[in-house]
Amino acid sequence: MTAPAADDSAPPLTVEDLEERLSRPTAGVRAVLGRYGGDVLVLGAGGKMGPSLARMTRRALDELGGVHAARRVVAVSRFGDGATRAALEAAGVVTVAADLADPRALAALPDAPSVIYMAGQKFGTSDAPSRTWGINTFLPGLVAERYAGSRLVAFSTGNVYPNTPAPGRGAAEDHALTPLGEYANSCVGRERVLEYVCDRHRTPLAIVRLSYAVDLRYGVVVDVARRVQRGEPVDVRNGWVNFIWQGDATAQALQCLARADVPAFVINVTGPEAVPVTEIARRVARQWRRQPRFVGMTAPDALLSDTTLAQRLFGPPTVPSGRLMDWVAAWLGAGNPTLEKPTKFEVRDGKF
Image (tube, rainbow, N blue to C red; front, side):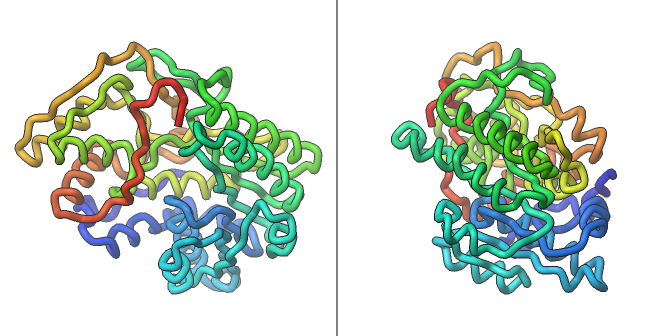
């Protein structure tokens, strides 16, 4: 299932246009969602990527029409941001405000044959490691028990891998999981607990190891570009990164519903190239006629993922890395907002 080329190569320059692009379903997404019946449940839908995924699912079902248009997309989150909830409701997504860690709230959630699990915690791990382990390891087991027998796609992270030589292809899905730091190890725990519970119940599971999705308001390219824009030095200790347009990452993750299996199907989702951080900085700087500054000694390894499997199944991303860098430069150059949530891509000791 190869996604079509992007309809429009011009950068989105308004929040409305950006949200439309991020939630634009591909033919592959429509094909996969058309195979199954029933509602689609998105757990942890209030984060950076969840709203786009819920809207893409809703749009795909509406475009399929007929019985599919009557299927519900149910987004579950604590919804501390009321605006996010209102926007989802306006897009036709049903929202449920619930704390997944509350057993009574989890039990009361609607049943669904297709479940996307997105909840997790990264930042703040150093200050509250037990909370990170609880959210990333204990909670997924409860969710897998609650939705035993459903088709489950669970988000993980490329942080489960150790650093590999850079530049290089990166870690493939069968690479040993020996990461640094409590956050990354709790994510290995999440995968193992999900695998255990799903194997026990014969629940089809797909694990999506996502690295650096970029939506113009957030992501590693935004972090680098913001430093260039502010005249700050760019840290190049981690000198190479993978990244992917968030719309492409969302489309690939939804297509993994068709790949969920027992034992679990595992896939890396990110951009196919290891891009030098210096290249990101210089490319955005050229658009602003600036000269970037750098700090730090580039290490010979980095956190990189091999996406050979994803490219074979889904084709290359519809937004190439160069175009995405140009889009970020145009977005920031126009004074558009960011989420002010740094990725901390430069961290090398696993402490977040």
